[in-house]
Image (cartoon, rainbow, N blue to C red; front, side):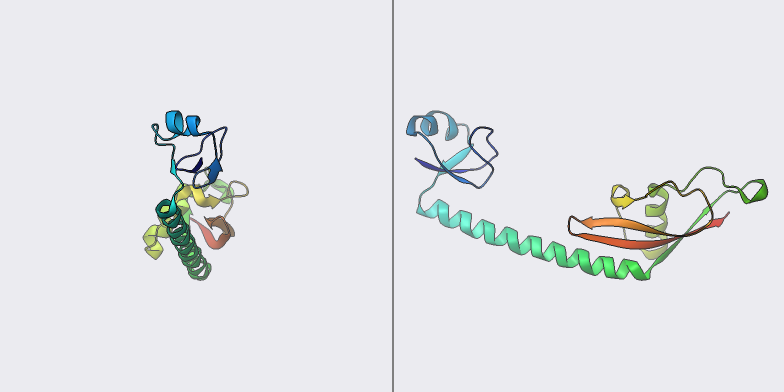
Length: 148
């Protein structure tokens, strides 16, 4: 019996795959537990439409991320931290502070988990920080660290 999987099943396959399994296994385990549905004409067509819609949404998300990355490269964020004697800083600039400063200064939100700092920013100056907006898109943001 051919079955379209609704979830990942360890020994069978991934979600939205069409697999050929024994009739008894399908009737007694896969179908009652809602792990899959029978691969008839209607369900096959629904799966095809769902895949087309998923591809369209993924393409749209990619385009939005690329546009956001282009806009972000023009922006500069200023972050102020305390300094002690001799111009040495107290602590470092975190991704949380960069995300908050970007929201305040530019009016757009970035998830702090997506900001990739190669090492802690502990000195004053201008730094270029990578922001992972999409699995295929990484934007660059200029961060200017000044004395408070």
